[in-house]
Image (tube, rainbow, N blue to C red; front, side, top):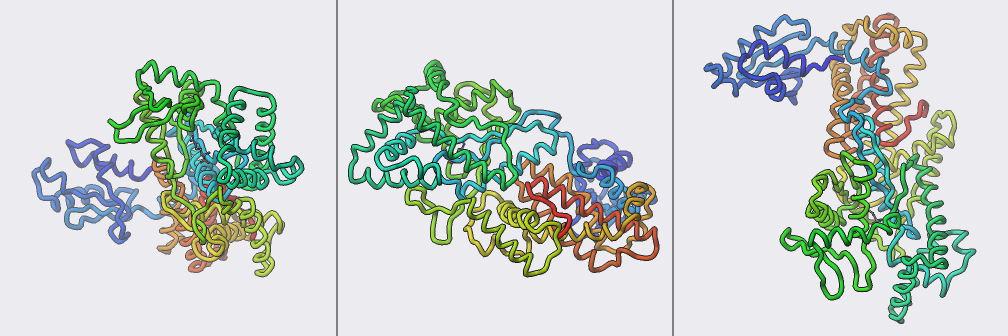
Length: 572
Ligand code: ARG
């Protein structure tokens, strides 16, 4: 497909001497008001170079561009050259490009096979996979898909929280008050109960804390009984997590969690020692970060046990050795900003230049309408319950509205889960938000179901178009798009044309909501087009031209939803 901005830059460089094509390209603007053209070129900066007044320069350029086949019209308005593309050429380029690229429309190869690690989800063993984890899970999955679409070789890592002193607590609590059947029947809720119980009891009996520490040390030393329990808790928890991942359609390439690095922790301590970064403080080992405006990082405790940060340093070094990543991305809540700043700084102080390639991608907090969540107090919303409820309620809505589906259960799952994912990815990730059932399941407005419904509507038009669609697609390069004259159609075409750039921008900013908002825009303009224009008209050529645009819109919405990890039903 022609890149019109590049093409215009190439034309301009012939008319304006003494300035590079890239500079020119960067100066080209897309006017917010389409009355000022599809592209505009401001001439202020050229005044010095050409020793002429900007409006005179603009006028000269406009005259030279006038008559080029890629434009319908070129005007100069004050210091600007306003360029209106040939609508026929532009739309033909677009629809034939999408017809050719199909599922790949919007993908590029800027990644060139470079390795990008996306670490996301990373729940804690024996703790609930709650609504707070959905953010990391869903944002991380979308970032992975976007990077893959941009030609990177991505690796999805689930850095499970499967290590740490809390396992000592859990085991102690299980031994005092637990039983096997409960754990098997309902692992996480039961284990969480043990954890809550431990804290209640420990308030009355502080000796329990020591007991838990001992048990954890045994676990670290690999004592059979403790390891067995830990392994069992981990397996049971993973079964539950996998149920959620399955519902969301999410997979990982590696589940190397915190415990995976347990035999590399000594080497981290030695590295820090060798680099003269370790200090002793009240029996503990720390890295002083005062010079860098941060509190000290605790590397080992008095009793020699490691910490969360130690394991992150070990993990990053391992990943560099093992994967030789181009980028190592961490999709983790903004509450952990300081933690990431600290350990990435330590990697830098160790002299690793790849510290700059470790990127924390933070996101805002989810709170419940009744306040923030607290694992210790058992105030959580379980993600699995949210998804199940969303699917159930979607089923009711579909039945109530008498919506036509291929299969009620499948569609309810696609739409219900899609709704939850979509609303997660609708706002800038850094924004905090309050989880509310009403909002998740509101099927009007800028929601997942609305976009999915628009997609299904386009699919239905194409079904009704029958053989004309196949013919149009096969001969898309000969399409006569002059039949489509409406401004809405042109606006729709422009939005579809921008999709590849949108994907690049979303990747650069690690911001899937840029894709979400763009497909909402496409859906809205598509619906306007659908209402404004009669699509399945008598005239075969006109019908084909319109069907090609419908096809392009449908394909782009589908590709966008795919990047977000949402299904695009053909009927609903
Ligand atoms: N398990 C942690 C939690 O639930 C998140 C892990 C984040 N990743 C990391 N490399 N520190 O809070």
